[in-house]
Length: 139
Image 1 (cartoon, helix red, strand yellow):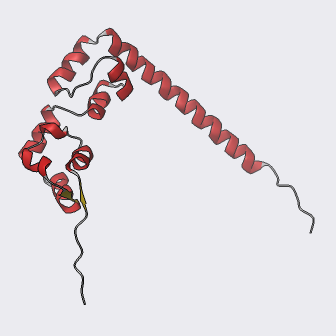
Image 2 (cartoon, rainbow, N blue to C red; image 1 turned 90 degrees about the vertical axis):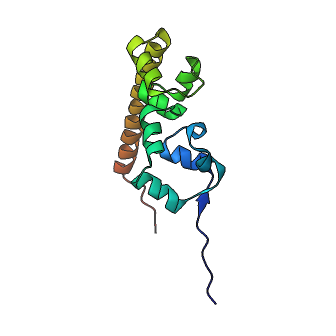
Image 3 (tube, rainbow, N blue to C red; image 1 turned 180 degrees about the vertical axis):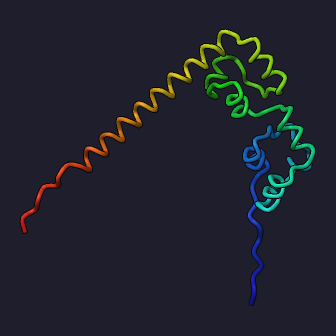
């Protein structure tokens, strides 16, 4: 008796997230049904024109917008950016540099410095703990 394996699938929203594209901008056929892992791999390895265009021109999802602007997703919300942006809109923001963008970029730099400092402190504590001789237990 042989059983056929059913391919693993994911929701189109998950596939769009893995591809780094805004779901609402994808073709209706992509949005309509589940996407198999094989289809996702095919899209990554040999992207169709619509995928190349979305990646190049947008609209881009919030994580991509935040990355391109050099801010956090929360920083986007604080700056009033709640919708997907195109590459042209992102370039305009980078050229204009509104006050909220300058402040959020500086904030992200400080947060990352602080995170690095904490990681270094934790590593030093682990290293110090590994150097301490363990209490000898009597037999």
